[in-house]
Length: 125
Image (tube, rainbow, N blue to C red; front, side, top):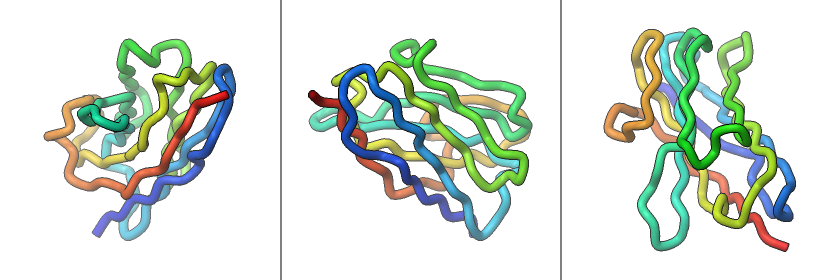
């Protein structure tokens, strides 16, 4: 059974960068789209980015376009979220999730079957 573990969160100053990792175990990610979501205190969880199983297609929320980049490694065990020019409003718990589907991208949380436990990102001076 596929399990996901996020890492790479932490405290960073505004304008800084972080790279989040989502590592899979129990299965490869060959047939899964992987999404990143975040939940800030007092707010609903929202979609941030998604990459298709092939890695060809990506999707971003408007709030992170041009600042965040999603990628996946060729061994198909890890998906990354590169976050640049971070802002205080990016502060949240970040989750990765897997959607079994060939070559699709979505930010609809209902489409994702497996979720990690999350990693905290805090952007503050």
